[in-house]
Image (tube, rainbow, N blue to C red; front, side, top):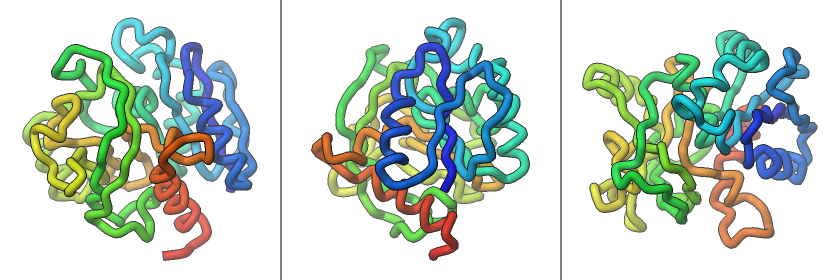
Length: 231
């Protein structure tokens, strides 16, 4: 699998994502925000961080980077795109994903381990995963409060586009288990075509031997299954 990881000024999780895919044996390249060539990837990663210092709104300036125009074209051709944290924010700014990420309900930056529930196996990013599976994936954000209007939320629910919800250790998506106030406990969604995923939690921070939890590997394994045609 060929993976392209985009680096913006202020990205701080690009090398984490790069390392994960290199360790998994994939041909992985770092792509600078001013470049205009994605280098023929199977998967594009928009990593976490603070692109352009998060001035204006998170992701609002990054959407105008030359490489993002190529990412949008790639996605519209059916290419796989995974936006993590700041990458999710960028995807909403480009319109590749609906809704917006607002300030956390607490108005504070949150950095902690967080339980997620897999809601659907119907995507390249959850191929072979069992709905209801509980993952422990770290979060680190101040603007992770997902919002969409009532009509948009119903569309996400009806079309099975919500892949991950915040939950407790027992898998209950309660108000108390919601770390940032996100509507419907939403932690990750896909687009209509199901080839673009945005998620606030950081699977790349739970996918190497240097950390205490490897639940993030389940998402990367799912992508590999899809690329290799394995159900």
